[in-house]
Image (cartoon, rainbow over all chains, first blue to last red; front, side):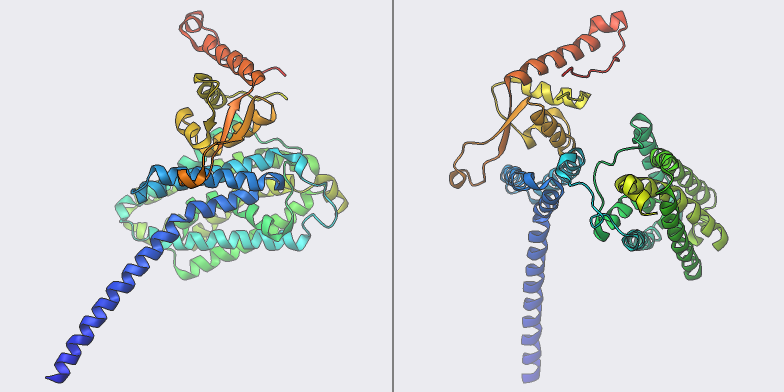
Length: 317
Length: 113
């Protein structure tokens, strides 16, 4: 009898404790989510030129506070509006930074990235993209086979959008707008250039066996090394580099459209094989991944060449 | 300093022209002009550096209002003249008379320095 009472009391206490803790966790999650726009504002602050940072941050926080007041009692609306505004402002900060060339010091030997930083930054950036793609592939594997072909529409859409933008406003093949210095910035540029690949790599990894995945990763590692060597070669061939910088985004966009269309065809016409992946067999998977990486790496090669100083690169031959 | 005029810049200038004396705020302009903050702030930065806009801060008591003062933007005299010319130029090239005359939207709506 005593044991039963004790067990009941323990169960009640445990249930109460679980409720309290889950309530606390929920409140913690809500508070942290609500602070996301402010975190983005802090990132945006670091992107603008140094003399504008405090003013920029003060302005963003004031606008976010106004949005919070306007959406009082509507936490989801507040989060959505706050995030939309803060993420837009972050993109705007980046654009302002690019346009403010005068705030950047002239490059010196110490400020430019060394070879090891270029190599390490590229590998780190691509490793992050691959990690995200592998995670996304696990999620894609849950999608029913008959709807798998829809996944191919995403890279097609992004590729068409990027191609239209690059044709309307082609990238200039000269005069870098900002300076890339240090391992962290090379990594960020690599991620930014290769991020479109996230729409296609999960489709390649989806349903691939462990051995196929390892082979694809080995191919990527080899291609990164080749792209680093190509960039070093381009450093002393400015005319070729300028063409690559100008046409790189268009090649990458065309690659996305082709592979997205191929993914739609492959998974749409072979629904029974969709579970085994977008490509039948490791050889084709390697070929598809390698060709896509080569297309998107042209863009990163071009932009990293643009963002280093061409005259200095010539001296670094 | 020449300002590159795009349709989004024209949308932002039109918002200012609705009441040239009224100071406008960033978030409010994104809704009024129908542009994202990522598009708006570089436009405001370019217009401010070109001398078309002057920036200031909202005159409120943060303790009473329960929020900090926001940054506002207002057309300068030069900005007002340029904005009127730019928006009038767009209306001239896109209005019914222009459509009847089949005027092309090009040449570009670039403002002369």
